[in-house]
Length: 253
Ligand code: 13P
Image (tube, rainbow, N blue to C red; front, side, top):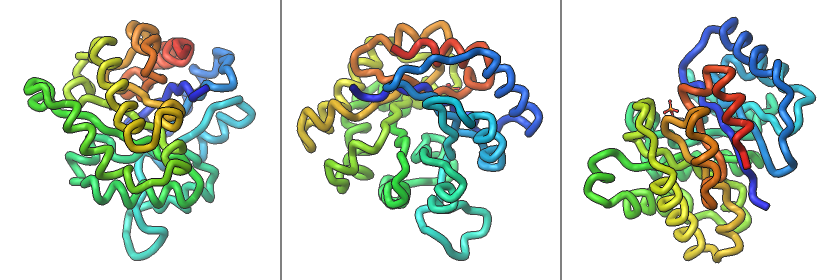
C-alpha cells in the first residue's frame, strides 16, 4: 500500500516561540496514524532541532527540510548540504518548490542534481512540480508537468524512483485560496502516475505517493484525499494553524 502523507510547509514563517506554540497546540491532539500514513513538517532549518525534539516518540511523524544544496560540502556560504540534514536526523527534503524555481531560478537540471544528493544519503526527496496559470488556461498542464518530471527524475532507476514523493502544486492555487477541484487534481495526478508507468511500469508507478498542494485546508482535504490518485497534501498556509493541520492529518484515508 503506498504512503498517504500530510506534509506541512511552513515556508519562511514563525518565530521560534511561535513554532513552539504551534507544535504544542498541535500535539494536544493524539494522532492515530496507520502504518501507511505519515505527517511531515518541513520547517525553516533553524527550527529542525526543536521540531525533531517535539516529534520524538511520535509514530510516523517526521521533520523535513525545505531545500538543500546539490553539493555535499564546500565554499557555499549560507547553504546547507543534504548530508548535514542527514547528520541531524532529517530524512525528507522538499525540492523544487515553485517558489524556489521562481525566486531562486532553480532549473530542472539543478533539481536533478539535488534529487541525486538527497537519494545519495538515503533520504526522501519531496519533489514539487506544477504549472502556472497561463499554461493551465491554455490546457497545456500535462505537457508542462511531464517535462518537469522527465527532466529532473527520469535518470533515476526504478529502485530510486519509488523513494521519491511527488507534490503536484499548481502555481495558480498556491496561497491564492483557489484550490484545484478534486476532479482537476485527480485528472492530473492520474496523468502523472501514467507518466511514471510509461517509463517504469505500472507496479512501480503504483508505489509512488503523489501529494496535492495549493490552498489545501480542513474544509477541502477530505474531498481531495478521497481521490484515488491523491495520496495526501503539501500544505502551506493552513499548516500554520493547529486546528487546520490537525484536521488535514485526520483527513488522510
Ligand atoms: P498554500 O497551502 O498556502 O496554498 O501553499 C501551498 C504550498 O506551496 C505548499 O508547499
